Length: 113
Length: 113
Picture 1 (cartoon, chains in turn cyan, blue):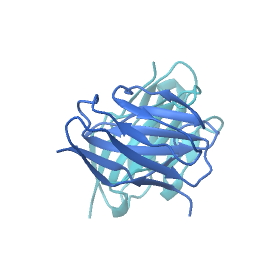
Picture 2 (cartoon, each protein chain N blue to C red):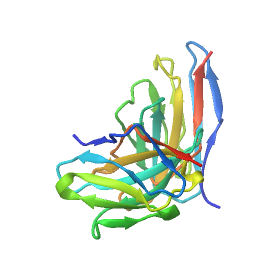
Picture 3 (cartoon, helix red, strand yellow):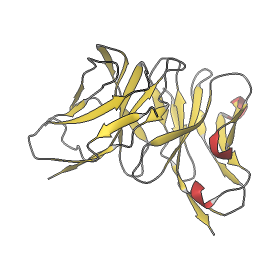
Picture 4 (cartoon, rainbow over the protein chains, first blue to last red):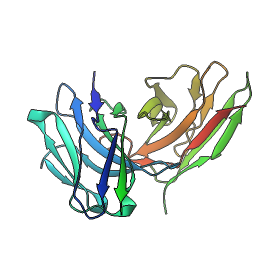
């Protein structure tokens, strides 16, 4: 069975600092991988996705993520965080078997001025 | 702009009552999904549908029912059999590529009276 672990429940960074959110997955083959962002009381917005090909994926809002098969990881990065990036971030793994996505428990990002 | 509309935003259920959450999309997406989100947790899949008049159970389908009579609509009924319905419910949709949720509505928060 597939699973996702986001080791950090809460991260605080200063505005302008770099950010890395960790995501580790368990899946028998090459998975589909996703990062989403959620603001309080709202739905999720897809930041980026990996299906195949280049392991460094560019997304919206200046985010990128790198798929590392050897480490079963798909960490999300941003070089300079803005106050508006404060939100909850979810990593998800999807099996090619359609519709079956598993979400991590999320990482809450706080941005200090 | 295309998107997913969920209604109502807030819903209250009495004991023994069935309630229906609405989800409409104008993205012309084939696949639609219902997720449940509890505090501090990721999303858990309730039901999903890849085509009209067809749907599959997700990981926590007990106490819920759905229908998919039209491509743009995927209502979720929370039945009286669901003993712990208080949660945030999210509807999502996707194109055929990867068939993983890519667009989300803003959610419905269901509470018990």
